[in-house]
Amino acid sequence: MPKMGAAKAAMKKLNGTAVGSSKIRVKKAEQKENSSKADTSSPDE
Image: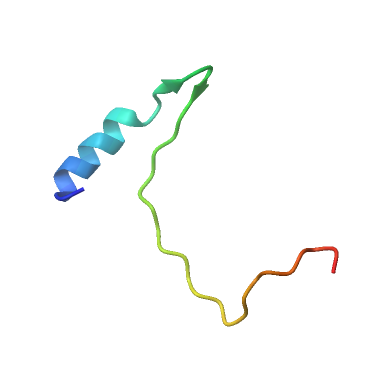
């Protein structure tokens, strides 16, 4: 969103909104930390 105020208003408006038979929770996205290893292996290996 171009403006932080508009983004906050949209999050507040959408948080708790029913989608189908479920309520959604809207939060600010957080950037994931880059790990030193690529996690491409499956847990069974």
